[in-house]
Image 1 (cartoon, rainbow, N blue to C red):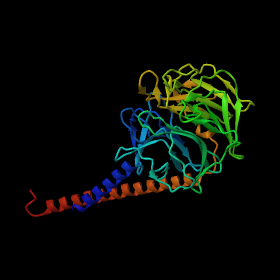
Image 2 (tube, rainbow, N blue to C red):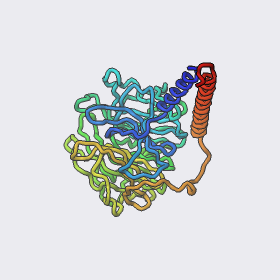
Image 3 (cartoon, rainbow, N blue to C red):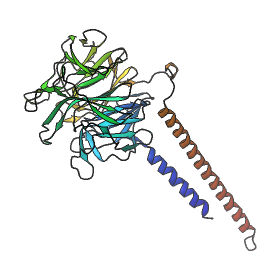
Length: 430
């Protein structure tokens, strides 16, 4: 008679295991900055970062298919496996089919030894299995580096410009780069482009966005002429341009409003050709200047030649505090700002902020578009695989629940029958 109990216990434990593997709802993440974020299938994923006093590497997400406000957020922790290091000051780039996150560069600390570990420049995260791996990358050797931004063009090549490698991990001083490295995500090879004409100075912690025509726009950050010189802030009107078709550098002198120079700021490219930047830090005398940059928010019109800077009206109303080390992602009509460090408080920000790019206003409530107005498209192979996985998993869980109910029913019926037999035996009738 204990068989149904044993089977039920086994099924129940299996269900708990499946649930624990998938995710943890109502997760409360630590405040952080210098992290990464990507959007995959209506989910805003946060990866790693620095949380003051200690490092963490977690993956958790915000479901963007639901309405909420920025004071009532429901985070979900994903149980990920296989990443051997803590990472911050890195860049993350999503593959063309939304199946893989490429985590490139950054400060990397071994989770077991707590020593800095640069044995791998790249780690990949499989969005379907929630597992990390160390891909085998052939081609040219690329030295470790931090404070970079990567972009991917429509042939699956990721472009990484410049950066800084901290050889002194106390002062964070080290080697600067002005090279362009290309990672082919299909052939899994690095190529260091041999360019000498119009080569820019070494540069780090800039903003990088790629236009539909394949031109990468580099804005702001820090640059220096040699490894012995101090960094200086880049003039925000001196725009670096890299053509991914001809592999040539050029520079454009933007016009319009004055935009204070900065680094550790964020940027997004809107569908109508505007680059919106937010926040950042100043820098002077070879050290960080913890003062707010002005303006907090600005936009660059790339539809004009030359590009034009402007400051949207009301962009200071309900704006976030002066922050740096945050991330920005574009989702439909919203620029979504996550975490970061707030100036003057030596503390990181736990809130999420929403800027509506259509109304040019900061809003408190986030609302996804009406499902009726969403344009449908042919799902990618990764999306189809994810859907099949979800259907299969749901079917399996349903079957397990059905089996458990059947065994419970059998157990109850047997107990009732046995009790009936006992009551009918001689000596049990009053």
